[in-house]
Length: 95
Image 1: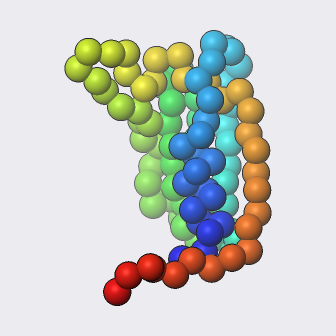
Image 2 (image 1 turned 135 degrees about the vertical axis):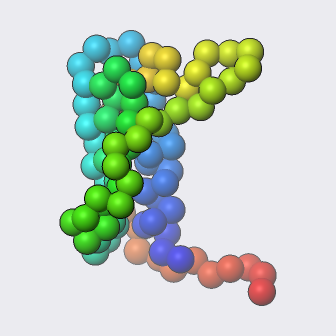
């Protein structure tokens, strides 16, 4: 598996929670631009996934619910984005 794909997951997972009120959309694409993940922080955070310019996951709520704590979506805002490109291959260490 290409580490760039792993970096896409890391970027989406590392969006920072803050109290800014300006909505922002962040798009992250695979190296060949076939896969595009969009994350939007407007009121309720959402994500969308496209493959070959076709939406395969329509805008969906992004978040987690906890029994004894605030949900992941409370106060969720994208404050900064850092993109990094890595050109490495990853091999399974087992099997």
